[in-house]
Structures are given as structure tokens and as C-alpha cells.
Length: 201
Length: 98
Image 1: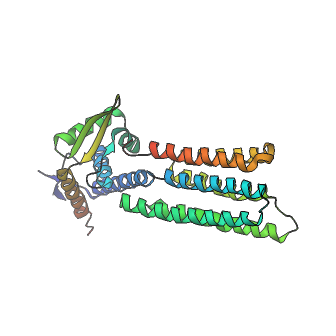
Image 2: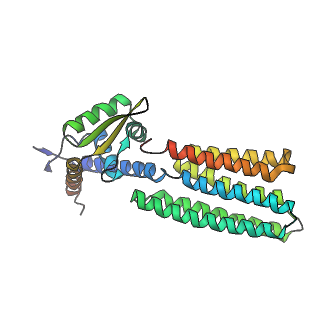
Image 3: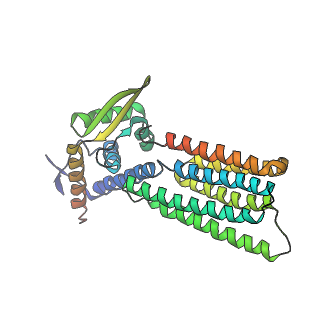
């Protein structure tokens, strides 16, 4: 049956379709976001444990190198997870670009702040270096939480708070406490998020 | 402008449901609570609209148990997919979008 159809009515319907598409694509895109957390949780866990072992054996010169290698594995893993997600959702996720920009900005600003500190007389301790980079990453979690969901922001804030508490009250066991924190917060959080944000939960 | 419009789909909530299911991809299912939360609908509201879409043969509703918990999965049928594409085409024609 034919009926009179106003342009404004069609416009409204089309806009609601676009909005529903955007919402569902966000739901699809964040389905396996927990995999990133699990990956980086394992990278950080291995990093802190290795740092502790190398420190015990007095092999300080290998600490930075081991972190570089682990971060390299993390970046490769991140790339693989991203490719798999794109293949799986088969959809363009507009916020993905902004999330990429957030990470890029954080790394760049982290490097700038690092360079400024290096210009001065101040030398950062191992714990301070660790806190600086970790908390930059956690700021990223909080910002990404705005796009994807409050759970990620909560993990970011919790890790920040516990990392500072560890540095202040458990500096003797800092590497071990951080290894455990990363394992619980990132791997545990990642598994929880994967379950919670699954469209077939 | 006089056009033939699918009255089942042309209802604000059902339009959103169809669009969400279409965005899922072919053969993909979504759990009832995920769809409800995504579209910010109540259980009753979503159920009643899904029933209408199911009667028209546009969606498939699969009820199952996982352990002791009942689960409901929703997906778009081929007929639903075609009808939704026709509906969008009609909207674009009215708006003269190619």
C-alpha cells in the first residue's frame, strides 16, 4: 500500500538507522578488547619478573633490553589482534582511529616528558621510570574507557592507585607486586571484559 | 511523495532493531540482553517488537538453556535482510540519495 512520505520522516528514519549501526559496531568492536589487556598483562608480568631476576643476578644492563624485546612482542601481538578483530567484525569502527590517536599522543607526550627529565640533573630511579610509563598507559585506559566502556577506565584507575601504593609502601618488592598487579588487573580484567562484552554472553 | 513503505519496519524502535541486526552481519546472532542494553529498551518493549518482526518472518528467535539459565538469541533472516535493504532504498529514494 502506498502512503504519503515526508522527506523529514525519511531523514529521521535514516538517521536512526545510522545511529543504530554505530552503536552495534561499537558493541562488535569492543567484543574482544579484553585480548589486548590479556596480552599486555602477560607482557608486563614477564617484564617485571625478568627485571627482578636480572636485578638479583646483578645483570642490570639486560633489564632495558628485555623490556624492549617484550614490548616488541606486545606490539606484534597488538597488530595481530587488531587484524583479527577487523576480519571478525568486517566493519569500520570510526572510534578506532581516535583510540589509535590517543595511544600515539600518549607515547609522544611520554617521550617529550622523558626527554625533559633527561635534560635536567635529576635521575629517575627504576621505580619512578616504571611508574611514569605505566601511568601514561593508564591514562590511555581512562581515555579509551570514554569510548568503549567504564570497565576499562576502572582498570586504569585501579592500576594507577595500586602502582603508587606499591611504590610507596612495597618498594622492596616493587617488581613482584607490579607483576602480580598486572597479572590480576590486566589478565583478569581482560577475561572479565571478554565475557561481559560478548554479544553471545 | 507517495511511496510503498514496509509498515513493519517503519516504526522507530523496530527500525533500530532491524538496523542493529543488519550491522551484526549474515548469520550472526546477538543475545537478547545485549540488544536490549544497546538499544536502551525494556525487556517487555523489546519482546513485543521482536514478536512482530518474528511474525513477519524478519527475525529468528532461538531460545536455549545454558546450564540452568535461559538464553534468547536473535538474528536476521534472509527475508528480513532483503526487506531492510528495500526499506533503506525507499528512504534513499525519498531523500534522492544515490
